[in-house]
Amino acid sequence: MATGSKPKPQIPARPARPLWLVYLVSWLVPGGGHLWLGRRQKGVAFLVALPLMFAVGLALEGRLFPFEWSEPLVALAAIADLGSGLPYLIARMLGLGAGLASAVTYEYGNAFVITAGLLNALVIIDAHDIALGRK
Amino acid sequence: MAIHSHVLLMAVFAVFVALVGGMLMRDAPREQVRAGATVFVSLIGVALVIGWLLYLLPL
Image 1 (cartoon, chains in turn yellow, blue):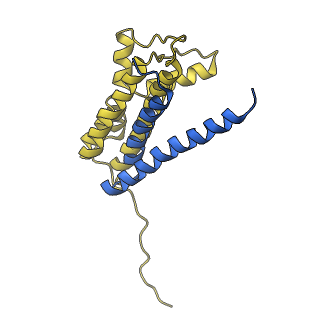
Image 2: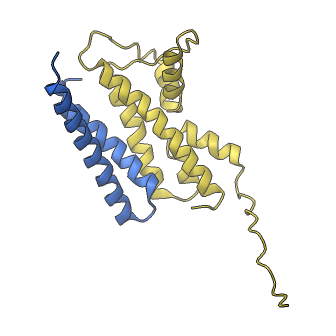
Image 3: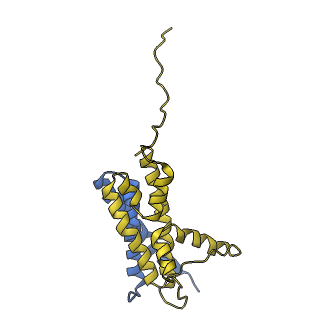
């Protein structure tokens, strides 16, 4: 019976940077995690596109939804808005994002703002994969 | 913002989603462009198809 050496199971290498810090940087600065991990091209693209998308959403009279847990859809939209990180926090501090429901572009604005936050969530997951050496 | 054209706003939205989506889905630049273009065309195409289907529905 052949006793060839079995391939050892792949143990993921310990990430060079603490994962929680990668998540935090990626969330706060869209694309910041990628820049920190050396993925300059992706990082710059996310850094430009996501805050710009968020800003366009606000310019279109989009609303930064409040955390109203009695209204599940509003709360979910608020969580999605929060995904944008620093642009969201700055907009909140400046009192932007009141939303003008009577504006023609109101729903578009919401779509832009919400989608920017959700896309940044995907960017954080991508940074996670890069930090673990999967990409 | 002065843009009130729904089609133009939809196209701008699709550009942002395609840019980020394409870069997330692939790693090689050429593949990223292809994936982004696919996302963009899909978003616009599906929106136009659904728009026409809704237009044909009686109110």
